[in-house]
Image (spheres, one colour):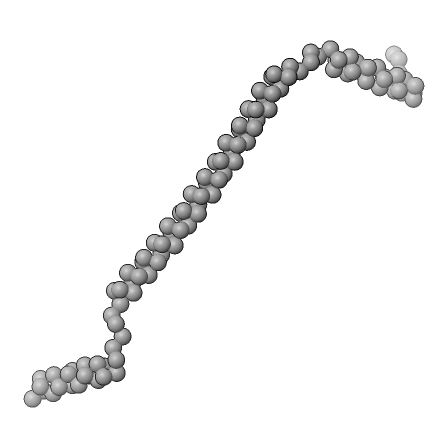
Length: 110
């Protein structure tokens, strides 16, 4: 049974050169890229990027509109709450209400 023989420097360099030459031959064997096909691919990519950009722009506008609607809704709710609240009574009005309650209580007792 033969033992494994470690390849020396010359064997490794020859194998690397052979692999490089094979890869170069495979690359040269490919047919050249058709300029029309390349232009069509570039145009399709540009159209796709433009569509994505437009989609992001529309999403940003929609988000801003939603934010503005939420703010308007909050302001409307605050205005409705303020309209519901009773107006603050002046000191004279408070005193008159107290006196009226006192007089009614006096009237009930007698």
